Image 1: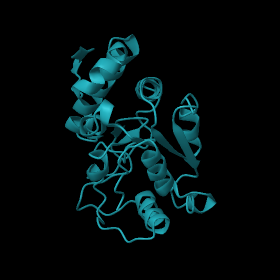
Image 2: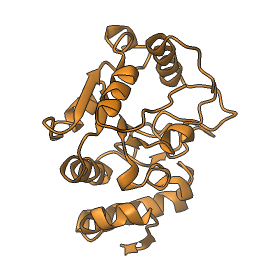
Image 3: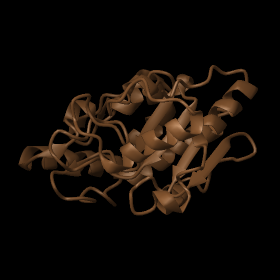
Image 4: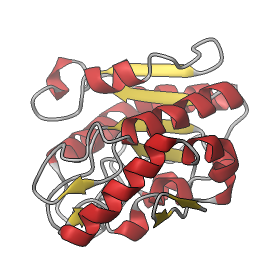
Length: 227
């Protein structure tokens, strides 16, 4: 599948639900911009990982959507999954707080201490950033180039075409992006962002992880092993 001048490789299960987006002019402009950015300097994540969240979590397998904003813009951090880093990387502050809340919420210590969240993605957790690429050491540098329109379409497709999903919206940005989710057929959990600046304002103690699993069980789905 081609858009503009860049080959777009995405899991086939998503392709059929998002095909109309790839044909729109904004996406052609976005892919041309992103391709030039990769040619001109360091951009994260690696180009092969731009759609990694989708590749690890096919459309029909999604149970939970965790919405982030931008990929990490430091070296060796962004890997295509919101909030995640590769196994040997130090935990970023927000992810450290997410892990603290999981342990507090579930009353058990984490079994997996690394920031590699592919274990969640493979269970049906879509770790979706609103913007899928970023220039190295330049936070927000790929905002308002078209990614937000694309990820809005992702959320809309999930809301419209699936039922019984859990959406975790942390912080005002994520809450605003989730405004069009059909709450009559999905569970929407909202809290403060897990960053150190705001985690104590409602993220800690939100119990989103146990609440998500209770909802999944009530809808005859296998719960997520967050630990």
